Length: 337
Image (cartoon, rainbow, N blue to C red):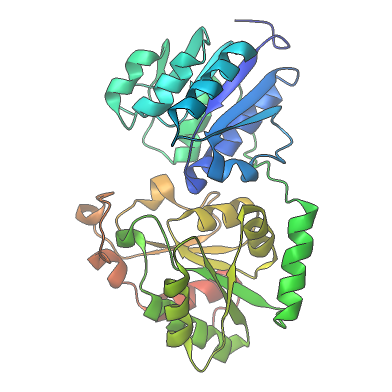
């Protein structure tokens, strides 16, 4: 293995938000083990801003996947950088091929039983068996294969000052002091809780505790946020659309965040904000809030743990009632009756 000051690591984790957050402790462990090493991360451009202020990284390489010319340009950039070790935390053909094309002589990833696409492992020089554990622990296993040691888990995130200032301005303009955040969207509808129930939760927490809700939404989710507000009446949630740095600033200031197994939930947990995770088809033992001080509300049976990307609300999510979530919020904040 090269000397610790000579190692050049390339992290390959293209998306999504929650998966990027769950890779951060492994990157921190690499930095702790190799303080003098060069450490770069290739990531889809839409997620790059969450990494650009990361104190552990020397380079963030944004990737535009829609253009072959842009991909070819990035590959040339990677090869010119002469990375000695590429670590694929994604386990897909696209990520494994990027690791291979980077020119790194050492390429580490999950073995065929652990990678999301088993055939992708042909592009690795070293394959790591992943235990049945949280994805953060699995990612730390890849870092250990590179020589890192598993210590205190940390999420190196830094919120840009301009994002903090803008969020403070918008919160003040809305008259918000004590507030909580609900995030009703998500990549798969089968992982989501219906907006009507989010709205009822907003109404109940405002009635009980006087907290107003901030409804966060991503691109294309404004109608969903409006449906939450309509269902919350007569409570008055505030709808805020944010970029990623502003989302960090927003959830950092919240009393708590309520969301399904989605990026905003994992980002809030990483920033130390209390979270209540609403889970159905995904297993919180693998994908839950990390660390484990937070509360997960889940009624799903083992047979309903499918990871199926459904376009309709799943029975497991529909089984979660508002009183369960209200109670979980109060327990997490030490207000249980």
